[in-house]
Image 1 (cartoon, helix red, strand yellow):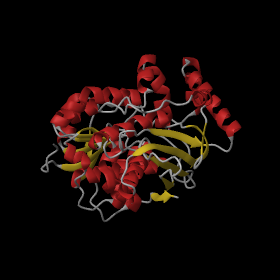
Image 2: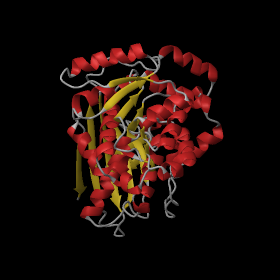
Image 3: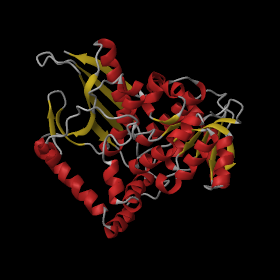
Length: 415
């Protein structure tokens, strides 16, 4: 386990990039002034420029140390040994993330990233979970816009159902209800890179929503109806008309891993499953979006079209300005159907989560706050002893700090 005598409590690797800078800014403006931290990257000049910007945000705070580190083993081992928690915002992670994971596993350093590359996450879990747990390293992947909202909403709802009704949850339906925003160059590069870095068999394996589950999945989980698989649509009494969720591929394996990590499924319930969608105005729009998504992903599988698409996106490390994201917004809604046997009295709960502002700002907040919790507090992830954890294993402490930072959450039982 990362010991208390390490020089830093947290190091932000990739602090000069788009998401890394948001992370550093939140640490500067919101975390306690005695929080010991550093920013790291390959360019000393760029790091010093970021440090100067941070000083303008909070002149009275001791500024972070600047650490120059290359993405090679000896540099990364030294960097990992210097800190309790290492945040890496350097992606695509399949290209740059593996040696960082290996350095943290080897040195027992806690680790955070914001990858959405579920085939890579799968590989890292398979290869490093046991050693990370043995060395006491809490490793949380996809700790940002992917997959914090879906994972924490699911955890919060099943906890609410357990505490108010005293039963498990049969299904949590998470819906990306409304979104206004623009993707950064790093996110778009990651999508492009997935088609270049993973084989079709790897992608198919990662499409299993239970692929990261640490224990045997529930035996009674129903498959998606044929019509839903063909059209990508679903009609729900509480949520209305739904269509394919753009984050389902990356988020659902994380939620189901949380199911297995939280008392081997006992908290969530023996029949639990999570599903993820987007809100749609009507069935025609829902089917149209499904078809557009299928065509888009099929097109990106072709190298010439990926080459053409790259001409029109931000470069990695870049993204929209703070002025351009002032009106960005995202809302998630979710319903938990309790595991009850009376069809005439369905017990369920509903949650609404909102974030006003850039989703990359939200991701930076997630990274900074979870680093603080891992460094200074005790959670389920700590009691498990480490290994490849999930955002939900940081539990109420994480959710409370995110709410204090601006995340809105409302949960209620439905009649």
